[in-house]
Length: 490
Ligand code: BES
Ligand code: MN
Ligand code: ZN
Image 1: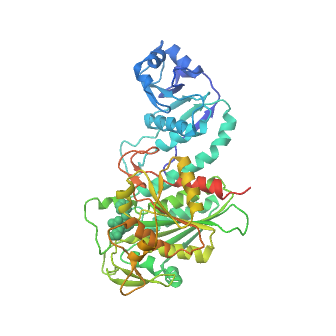
Image 2: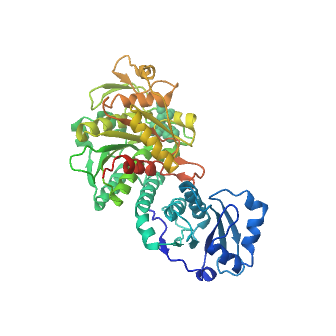
Image 3: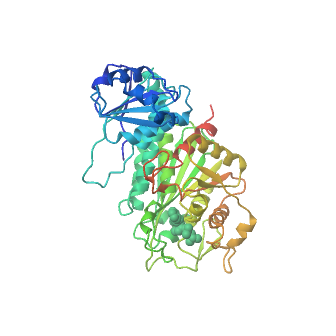
């Protein structure tokens, strides 16, 4: 796994500024007040900081912005990063400053004079999240990144406070690696193996193979994977950190390791992006990792359906009718609408086996959600106002975009089939909503449920608030917070 950059917290020692290699970062308020570290840097650079804060350029700076003074006089460092941050900065402003530092850092060593920053953990998390690089398959230019040192007011306390944030960062990295990994490397078996290795963190892992899935009746899921040489699997991760016997929250993920569309083959252009079609499963695995690492006091079960959607002589044909685990029959009009087939059976299995208090599923489910919401927000579909409000609040607090979408009977009616209980597509109109309606048919009415369509946010072509371009890990932080705020009693 890609390791988060090594972070070290220590007492402030201004004498180290002179000789520190790589980059040194100091804090200046928007109205130009230098803290102790900044004053020392100003002195060493013979007034460069004072000139900067008196300039027109500084007036335009917002909290969390960064200005670099390159090759500063009087210092061994290659760069002096000046962060604009008010004394009473909001958490998101501090995290934004961290992200700016993480971006500027590259592989260089970084010393941050954060003695007067009130939320050093937010700053640290921002640095780590942005300083991610998926370099597994680069044989050249692969350089070990140097670490980060933060000089803070009470290093021993900050070290303790940082533990949950570092757990979440590791969860995000785990997800990003899974999403970035090409499909010839991340087969269904490799995915299951990476999940199985998390037993060392105290998670109870169960991997269901094709024979077991057949016995249990998950024929919709199996129908998606049957054209592939990679065996279909369901991986279950149980974290029992809460009260014994308390019903768990279930997290369910679409894990299509590659989506060719099957017999309803996708066009060639852009098909390579379908390596991220296991993004929902990736987020579920990342959240479970974070919960285990920070020993969350909640019962949470993660279930992911791992399949590959391939065309072959054994593949499902358009027009085939398949019986779900629930017992309802589905006419598969389009084999490219496969994610909902996988999720339908895993949702049903989750309810039958774990009797969850609520369910949240994540899936790169529809291209239509990208048309509707772009890459800024995931689509939130729910049968319950309480759980969806709780989720939206958690997502907002973490700066992960999420937007509630409508559902209703008229949309559900679009799934009517001539020959079976339903068809798997509802037509072009409201494509993301009819997909959600399909899933809802496999959720018991009394089970609070959210479907998150993350097709637009799981992996993006330009950098986001917290990540370089590529896999984002969207949702790991929001779900971790949701568990912390709403499922960890005292
Ligand atoms: N995995 C795709 C959705 C997707 C599209 C994810 C773009 C990420 C980026 C999904 O399986 C799919 O193919 N959906 C079809 C549904 C259609 C056939 C009803 C789509 O969105 O076109
Ligand atoms: Mn598809
Ligand atoms: Zn898909």
